[in-house]
Image 1 (tube, helix red, strand yellow):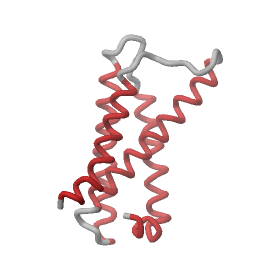
Image 2 (spheres, rainbow, N blue to C red):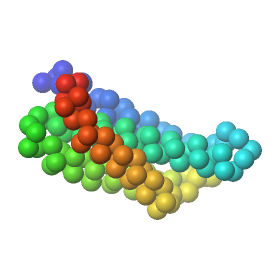
Image 3 (cartoon, rainbow, N blue to C red):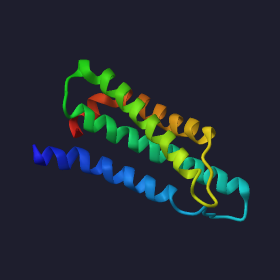
Image 4 (tube, rainbow, N blue to C red):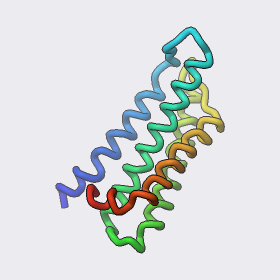
Length: 130
């Protein structure tokens, strides 16, 4: 049981901590171009929340590894991840040079949807590594 806890839940909470740490930092820039910065950082939103969604799904599915529980685990993981995205954006309202936005929650949701369809499409392969 302890091994299962570390294998499934530690990466999830580590990733959540990394997201929280990243959103606690002052605003960064990788280019003088506003458009380049926008595309880069919004792509990070897609990626980090797609990964978070997958980690939540993986942890939840570890308790009920049956195909008929797939939809339930996908749905619960989506709700939890969207809640975390919302609280992260709220948290950013209190960080100097940062701002929380509904647009970012929408972008995070797109990352989750991409992962959702990826899990649905490739579930037989994914199940082997879970």
